[in-house]
Image 1 (tube, helix red, strand yellow):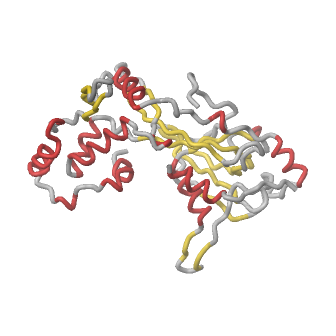
Image 2 (cartoon, one colour; image 1 turned 180 degrees about the horizontal axis):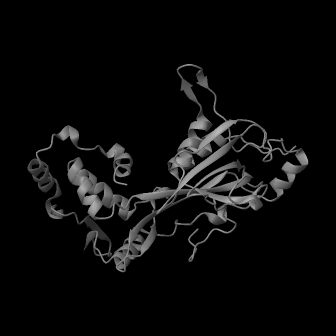
Image 3 (cartoon, rainbow, N blue to C red; image 1 turned 120 degrees about the horizontal axis):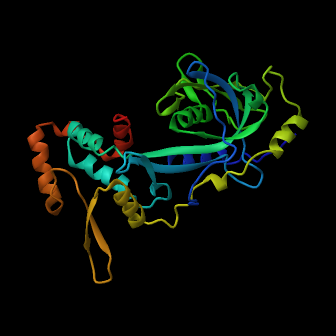
Length: 312
């Protein structure tokens, strides 16, 4: 029997879900769902990390935008490491400057540069009607916040009005985990897995629902891919690095930069349409009055992620 230390899994997953740089970054051996009539229903089993690593997945964060040629580009988001990020800070400045509808309009025109979170883990393909050759194999699996939200709900459990509290399930466990029923529709932005869900708790099995033997599980465990090499290292990137890259590619200025002291440090003032950076508080109050929207309608700084979700 494969024994993996799951101590701290609940804390790790919750911390990583809520919160090194390779040029030409690509993920090898990545699972690709094959659509049939623009949709798919695939049974997957998320797997634990290899024995040499401590977390079942890694997280990357990026901001997407169109460059001067209309092509999509990305820059890294620095908030994952609790560093100041120029695009996140600019979003927050717009968010705080205007009432709700005005802020939405400004952010939409600017491309709503919200950070996108993606996660990578190991996955075992149980059933894949569009590509039967992939069944019984191990891949790296990249997923977004929609799957992560469902994972967290399954991991943490929930209160059901009929059944009472339903205990959480560590979906990564070979013996006591649960399959992911990956239901997705093809869109212009890629597969939309909104209808996906985790099934009941049970041992890992083959496509005919036969539980795998210890020997078969050991063979899967030996094929687990490393995850750390899929994590972009942003620890050495600075506020200025990301801002310079963005402003060069997008040909847009997000901040006015002024030297703050003789040592060459800069002060960054966000450039926001209709807001004078030299008198932000007074001008913002004037803008709010012009919009004649009650203060209670203005979004609070605690729900900016939810606010930005409404833009897409």
